[in-house]
Image 1 (spheres, helix red, strand yellow):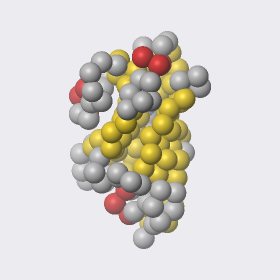
Image 2 (cartoon, rainbow, N blue to C red):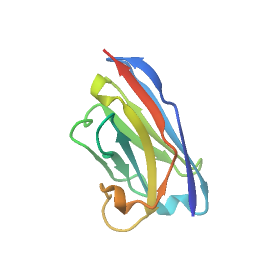
Image 3 (cartoon, rainbow, N blue to C red):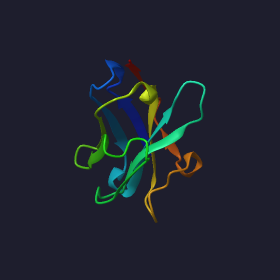
Image 4 (cartoon, one colour):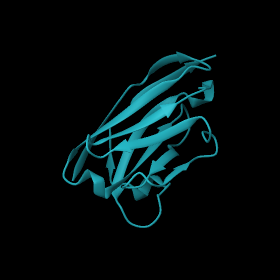
Length: 125
């Protein structure tokens, strides 16, 4: 089992940067794939970015590709989502999620079994 806690959200202006952190506790975090999802106002939860257990593979939604970077430090049990050139449409509650690693990085909500409580990101225009 793994427990996840997100931090780093806040209110920023369009064009600014923000770094979200996902801290994990529990056993063998390095065996888990981690994904970031977001829940925009009035919409469904959507995949943002994912990273393999080793950090060697990453995958991004088209909407954030080139602006967001996901990374992990297994020694510190953390996954970071660096968000640059933020847009108002990036406004959402951001969640990190984890699942035991096998196969490719999942992009579907139901494929992740562990979730954090979320952190709000608001981008003003």
